[in-house]
Length: 297
Image (cartoon, rainbow, N blue to C red; front, side):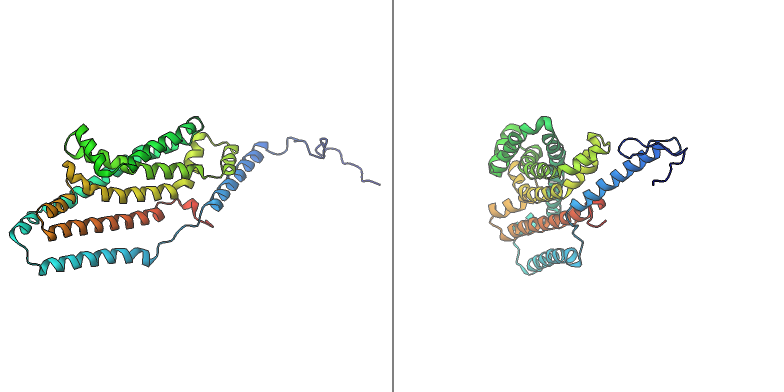
């Protein structure tokens, strides 16, 4: 025998589900389900991210120590070298400091314009409406990368004239491809299930982009920025041929005047700057990575 039903309880719908009887807040249930959905999406996002690379003492000290040793060895060599009047004139009057500062300015300004152009363009090319244009845009960016830097600079000097503008335009054209391709690759690599989960909990397209897609793409984007920075440090040495200044002035002066110390100093400073920039960018890859992407967070 079955126990008699007690009157006053909530009625049952077909399928065994209890109908809402007005005694509990349905809004609270919906809010709880939405919060659970958000937590599940966040957990899936963290689980799908690669493990975060930690800062170590080796990463913090080895490369800077090598750069310091390189600069110290160069300074000791100059102290013992017998410099003639032409060499002393080329290295006097703050010319070395000015050339180094110009080189840093060229690198920073060109990289800024690369980021302003490449990252928004990479986001645009991964949207459904513009996906068909991605191969064309990447091919055009590859033209700038494949063109010899000195030839591209010569063409820009003819078009823009001698000065910093031509040098910056050439550096930007040369370094756009790494950031653009890494941005597109990072956004394309996102798990479609995560994007659907984000949309399923009510996120807007802008919210999905800013809270899910871009954070997951950060490691690849930063790798592209790191590559662009090192490229710009090297390409900036050619700015001297277009009147843009930089450490290339010392290198060309050393070659033209046949003064090895001037050539060596310009080359060593360029190498040291490239190594320091690469080291700083490697730290930024760790420090700028969103905390939500830490494995096990």
